[in-house]
Amino acid sequence: MSDRLTSLDASFLYLEESTTAMHVGSVMVFQPPREGFDYDQLVGIIESRIGAIPRFRQKVRDVPGRIANPVWVDDEGFDMSYHVRRAGLPRPGSEEQLQDFVARVQPRKLDRTRPLWEVYLVEGLQDGRFAIVTKTHYSLIDGVNALDIAHVIVDAVKGEGEGLEPVPWEPSRAPSSAELLTEAVVDAVRRPTQVVDLVRGGLNDVLNVGLRAAESAGTLLSAVARTAARPAPDSPLNAEVGTARRWVMVSTDLDDYRTVRGRLARGAYAEDVTINDVVLATIAGGLRTWLLGRGEAVSGPTVVRAMVPVSIYGDDPAGMYANQVMACVVNLPVGEPGASMRLHQIAFAMRQQMEGGQAVGASSLANLAGFAPPTLHALGARLGSAMSRRLYNVMITNVPGPQSPLYAGDAKMLSTFPVMPLAKGQALSIGITSYDGGVYYGLNADREAMPDVDDLGSSILESLAELTSGRES
Image (cartoon, rainbow, N blue to C red; front, side, top):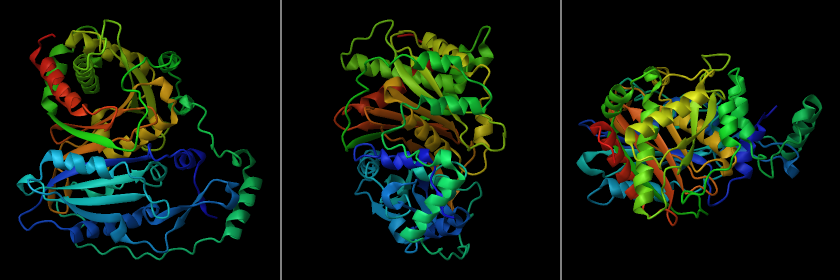
């Protein structure tokens, strides 16, 4: 029997449009070793590792007439050189040029006739550095059968993956159309309740996806339901989006967030102020400055509603990836002028939503096997896309990563930035990954609706400086 896509995975294919490509990405910047790092080395690392995850050599095949969900089949013509590509930046190879490159390649939809991932080796960065840019489709990443492609590229051990022989692979014969139809009929007999669940018209405002994730942890968080019951406030962050993007990298120091938490986390709930709360307060301050700079009306009650995926334990704490992401919907108090007050309001709101839940701590996430952040960002993006876009203004994913160096072969990873996709009607998405002492933001924005997204990046840095200095605006 063929491996059939779930209805949720199939919906990400059915609902994808040219303006809202449903894949996630990452940008990893490396310092090569003295002897260098080239395209063949990257291909060798990927070839030596994808054998353990069949999805990377499988493509989606529709059932004739779409009487059942599509199936995964081996790509008999799998071509590694198509999926792993080489690009170069012109001199001087600045971060702005890298940002422009990412903004150009990330919005392009993945080829449905091939396995749904791509990797770019981007050479020519300043100071001899290079970048690896990845793209992986939502439908491929479920945290069980497949992970984000970035997960398999880096390793905690220097030189790991180089020189290893690829695992021999022979593709299985692709089923004929008649066989696909027969299997669909057999599935209909064996599992009649799952047959006509093709989600062609959308997911019926599936806030239920987030609620089911919470239920899987043994609790239904009423705070989420209460907040999400009301439509998100009007915001310039919600606009019709086109196909063009702007993408901005923001690099910060993890110690700054720890300093803020240590100084401001005082009182009865001091232990409940988390680094994630400080990150959200930093973004809230940045959005406040950005909105004021645009001449938007900002008063005391003004908020920006964020959908913040949170990793939770299910019945099996070891199964960290399988549907273990819950939607927290939090109002960022951008109308509050005091930086410390914004932090405490956000911490209180997050604590309300997480009470009774089983949130995974930052240290647990950072210690997951492999480079987990790209996969967890992807699971968060899947959840955000399944929810109604009327419920929030912006999606923010923040995933702690390892605090020790990672390597692609002998090349040390210096920084890593998520590229979170835009949903319909969402002009901005924000992904954050902490890694090896840094906290790295990727701001992805519609090119027309947010031509000033670089101003938001600068405002985030100003907001963090305000928090660390203790001064109030």
